[in-house]
Image (cartoon, rainbow, N blue to C red; front, side, top):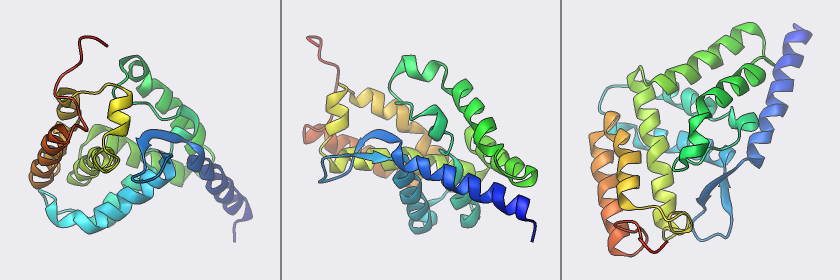
Length: 202
């Protein structure tokens, strides 16, 4: 056993535990608290396993789960960037790249390179697996907003146009899930969870 290698891996695993403390904007359905990023990644991995039949292409589900488990680890240092905040998103790429260097650098070189490769694959959407992973990454917040009656959308005055624009990427991994997402958005408007357009008085 290479104890130096094992110690590096254990250090990384303990550092990854900090993801449980990174809060996202979404609320958990029927609970008065925000989702954390560790919960988000676990839920996406489960979602991928259950919904793989809706992927547009034949994919390796194990590879999709690998991508989903590491795609947001950088939030340990970079924090969660609210997707509808234009100011926050301006330097998101730079902050997250720096976080990846710091975090993945804790691992042995071969595993560090592998995590960089998985993260870059997700960010660039260069494979059927990364496209499907990205589709789920957009769909899950949409579901949480719907099942929490639009609480986060209302707090930030988000409109249907914004949600449609943000989530249109779902179609790149699954036309069927994009059709489903559109029905969720339409029903959210009907039920008053999501504003059809911005309020000029706000």
